[in-house]
Length: 216
Length: 92
Length: 100
Image 1 (cartoon, rainbow over the protein chains, first blue to last red):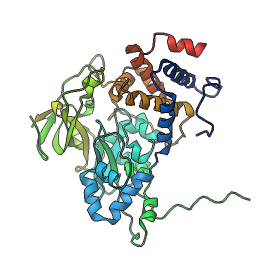
Image 2 (cartoon, one colour):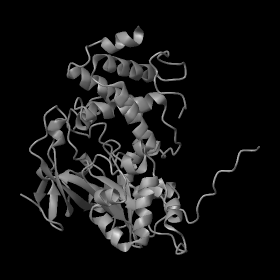
Image 3 (cartoon, helix red, strand yellow):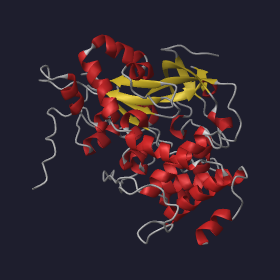
Image 4 (cartoon, each protein chain N blue to C red):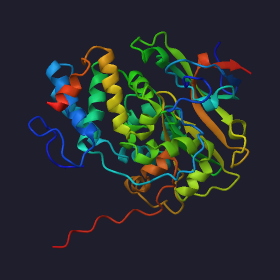
């Protein structure tokens, strides 16, 4: 993601490295602003909102569910309300559903028809989620897809693939890793990866090392 | 016709000209109701500039994977879940 | 449904046979992609184009174009299609602006 200001109105429409679509999108934006169909300020606000989205909010839901069983029950009944309870934005969908993994059930989410994804809680979907192979194979060979992601499930674990065909958004509550009883809620949230909330991975068992200081 | 959790259903096998959100791989398959969602505007009409009213009841259904794929390479207990509108469901 | 009714439409991908591995390379969104995403959001919020229309527009792409296009190229195609259909864009207007 580049760091320069998003106002391109006085810059050339495209540079040589971009696809033709880049110039077209910029030209479209300019046309729509000129016509008054959209306001430049609304575009900026929308970009700011998109940039603000990350898996951290989803991770907070999961971490709270891991330590508070009553919250977990509320989350399973109505994830949208549970997100609001924690001061999080659940996104535009009227219904958000949390899917709890267990020793005997593993959930995995896909949108075979396009790319529906709980963006408000997880940030933008990864490219692979939107890819044709994932959309094709997640439903017909989920265990093969999971093996590609490094996750092998025993045969007695029921794999449930959820195809997001409507405007309901789905979030997986992965299983809490063993040996985490002493961790704080924030520490637990740091174990919850985006991929574990899509259902193609398990959470981390230890926090990632924080970034090194740049050499001085 | 409205459905309840656990009820056996069949997903209609009909062709639909134009935008609709019932994937081909589900059409004609049998399963059960897992969740009763609320009503939603109908994407089939809203996609063409209409208001999508009246809202249609939406359900989360589940189907055994072995019902969907002739050579499904997984467990007999694996299931596929999808959101399907009431007008695409029939009692089974 | 595809036009001849015998196979799924190009966007209806569940279960399509494929040996393609899932490419897990991720890329940060380019500015133009973020702009495309934002435009759809703003058009939706102001009631000009809803998400069902966006999807319908994407699904109207010729199959070979759909498969060759990147994700946000599909969104661009849909915006152009739907906005022209609604008379927000004149035919050829965007081409002229890009060329000019």
